[in-house]
Image 1 (cartoon, rainbow, N blue to C red):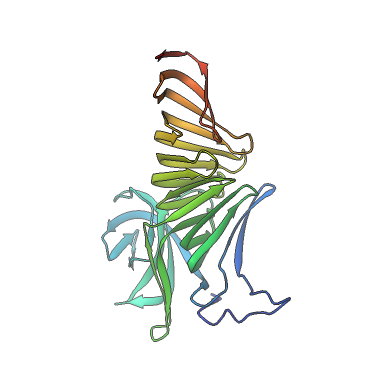
Image 2: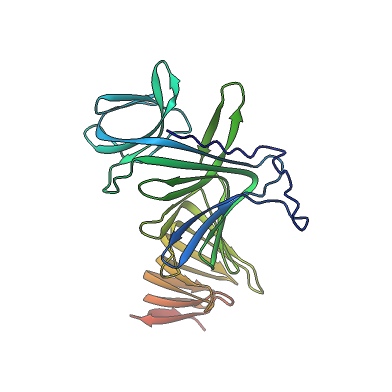
Length: 309
């Protein structure tokens, strides 16, 4: 099976000086008329690495921190192996593995997840690492950044952005990948959200940023906020904050279960048990429009409240 080893290490900031610009390696996922693009700076310390693997589908029989058994085949794994959460013996799974990288006679498990209906035979994993941050553009409106990105092709296309690091081990002739929860930032317009790990699935067009999240928006009245998670729907350009949403701005604190951010409009729409308080009192409602620039609120459904003179 053909192998591809494309490794951008250190000085492979080999400045393809075209108009004095550093070459920025990138990978693109296409969904309908939109693109998701991940790229590294191409500067010293950045890395862009790609390799092919094979796919095998079967019943998961055993899974430990160092070994997996799928059907009649066994694999070894390490910190760089990507495992779908919640797998247990008996699940029908798809294993992506490197048959040429062996340890004690076992091939290396690159990724393990529940089997779908894709039916692909080969797997391509691209690893992007940049201490300055791998840049991920989700369509035209949203940008995310984190140190390490794993992009999967073959079967279901996915992108995982997280903390951690990657380096090429010359003596062993292999890449060491160590994903870890870390500082992953997502921005839309003036709004910035920081979380720990972002996963994008190209079959659904959905990106999910795990929390806890910290939100900020600069301006005359700076906005600070928090939530448990974020969901971005690429097709609809819809950015949702989920779980224990809180905005603090200009002496006003507003809480809700979820919020839809419409950055272009300058508003957020808050839903479910919304309560907004300041020194003058409070208002409650099931749906509230929140002005991101000023913190002013308008209750759009089931209003209640109390104001003090």
